[in-house]
Image 1: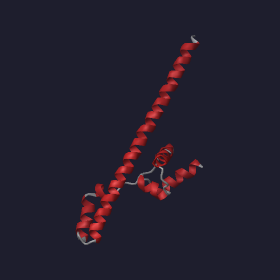
Image 2: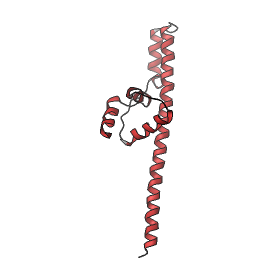
Image 3: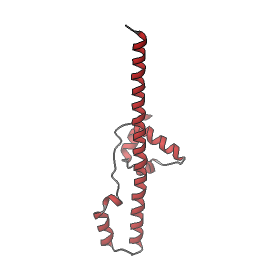
Image 4: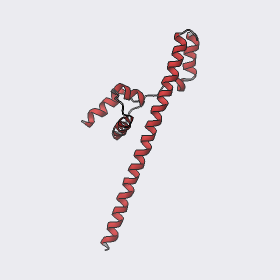
Length: 125
């Protein structure tokens, strides 16, 4: 039995586990960034369309048809957080932005179900 060899293998295994966890963290972080940007674009699209509608530049029928026929352009899909660690990633993103957000704004920004987000946050306490 070679203690040095076993120790090196254990260190290598630990390194790979840490590396894989870090890669997973970076991948999720990027997905949340992309989701936030897409949601801001969708919100902007909806606000523009709503403004056209409010200013009577488009009819009720055109307004509702546009939303119905292009829902991906005007509506977000709300999701649940399945991994409680995702809250830590979102918290990291928000800290990097240097802004204060309400829980409602975080929910909206990242397309998260508000009740699910509140439940996950209460589980962290």
